[in-house]
Amino acid sequence: MRVFHDPASSEYRCPGGAVATGTAVFLRFRVEECADPARLSLTLTRKFREEVSEISVEGAPECGSAYGFRIGEDVLSAPGVYFYGLRCGEEMTGNIDRITVYEPGLKAPGWFKNAVIYQIFPDRFAVSEDPRVVPKENSFTYASVNDKPEYLKDADGEVVRWDFYGGNLKGIEDNLSYVESLGADTVYLNPVFEAASNHRYDTGDYEHIDGLLGGDAAFSELVQAMNSRNMRLILDGVFSHTGRRSRYFEAAQRGEAPYAGWYTFRNDGTYVCWWDVADLPCVKELEPSYLEYTVTGRDSIVRRWLRAGASGWRLDVADELPDEFLEALMKAATEEKPDAAVFGEVWEDGTDKVSYGIHRSYFTKRELHSQTNYPFRERLLKFLEGSMSAGQISGLFREDSIHYPPEVYYSLVNMTGTHDVERLFTYLKRITRGDVRLASGLLKAYSLVQFCFPGVPLIYYGDEICMEGGTDPDNRRFFDWSRAGGDTCAWFSGLSELRRSEEALTGGSISFIDAGDNIFAFSRAGNNGKYFLCAVDRFGRGPEFILDRLEENRSNIKPSLDFPDNFRYNIVKQADGYATLLEIV
Image (tube, rainbow, N blue to C red):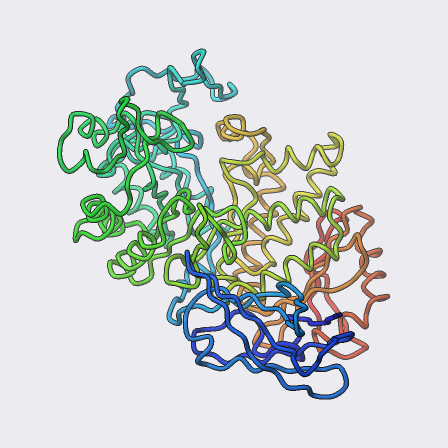
């Protein structure tokens, strides 16, 4: 049996994309070499958390080799991911595609969808004089901000003394004008609560800001300063584990209630910890007293910091958090602050994520507004280095537009980088074999796509000045203030201004254009009739070459944008020969 089906075409799937529960969907297939067409049926396999159920839908032949199937409202009445294929007698196709069916009502905050986020690793951004700063025991501070970070570990690989540069919240407050100059209106901070380490993912006390950062008073002043600039703050929530030196775990070791019930201790005195890192003992997230303390209580951690001025939470290792915990957190956050944003650290396609044998329901239930879009970064870098063709990357991005609910798709967090991956400029320098000028051009091409693509752009501190660094801890160097305000800073500022001024680049529909294996091209169409076309040539052969290729492939452009054959354009942005953004006029 041979089958053709294009889920991106309204001829073959209507409505296209993810749908709310109780929506009817029509599917069409062209089928050849089916031994018994009279027995042709559609098979649906619903996956929701640990549930798997199978449904069969009878179809009707249309004409020739075309067969249509109507999936009724009652069939898609429950949230989940429905994988579909065809059965002809005993012959089956396997899964052809899937339909994401989500609970209606989840709506990402408007400010978040239109945001430009600047991520700051608090210890590594800026130091300002603050008498409230409290030094840490058993730590050391680098003599120079130009020193490269290193871990001091013992023979077993455990950190014996944590290293710091002394970055603090007052330093961030004093440099908000710089963040603002990039066009960023939202700051996402890596953890700021009391902890032993420099990364602070080993929370010691959720109720207080780390003394080395200036404490609770410094946080209040930072929030006030951001409010005066109409800027927003997102906090990092680490709720799957605490620190070994936390007040909670130390109390649990003494057998104190309720903390003793938060952790899993073994008979030999060891305990369950995150990825076998002894510093990070895992918690039982659904243990009632822990859930009340962090999420559901009237003065829970999630609520109290939103009340204190935060606008949202980024949830560390969302894969480790039970779906029920995420649902409760979303409910608490949006009750406390209706426009609070909640997004999770997810490294893969969040609509088909399986974690610990459970099919996750991040977006089919009301759990997350968004996720960290690591696939965006991975694919775009693979295209730029030549290990993925333009057709391949377009196909994967097209699948995203079908599988994610629209509210989520337009809220995906597209990063230049994060504290967990190699620095963007270091990666691009490897592509260009060390040529700084060419790597700078690729960085501009990458960011042009990032700011013109559906989703929320995030700039990892220092990527805008082409800071370098390998993996942790090298990607967490101190910010190089001697390079702030240069050419690439102006480039990011211009992209932010453009994105903010053009509705088509935030909420407009997207179409992917075939312009050859080495040119990745897509268009954005706004509700106001404006069209933009972005094209990236990974060989950097200049705007004229790109325009020639687009001219040759005009037939691939016209159907998706529906503008006349003699269309004209204005060049809006050029990224050193690597990328061009056109406005169709």
